[in-house]
Image 1 (spheres, rainbow, N blue to C red):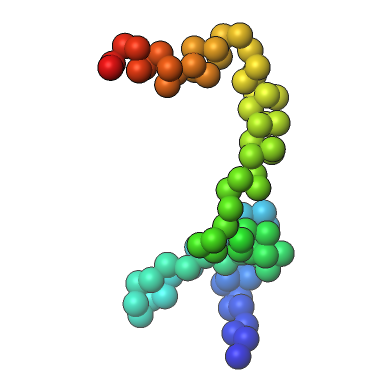
Image 2 (cartoon, rainbow, N blue to C red):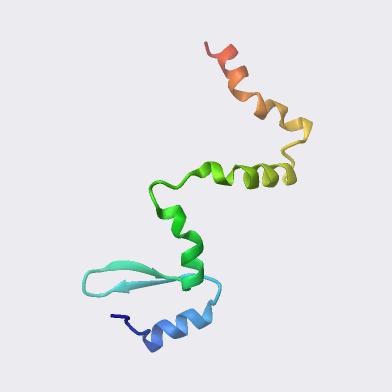
Length: 89
């Protein structure tokens, strides 16, 4: 069974095509989120219990470096655990 969108849901999706639309079941007051199927397929792996975050490490590192993570001012942050152990034995 594949339910069809209501006119109200379609209007909400068209008003914000890049954003998910929150809908509420009036009978149970349960909230749901409508997203395009292609968006759901991209995020589905994140919802699975055995998802391995190490797959994202290269992208995280690249993003951190672009955001200034290689800046010498970040050295204190990068050495945080070592310095904390010295200050709070």
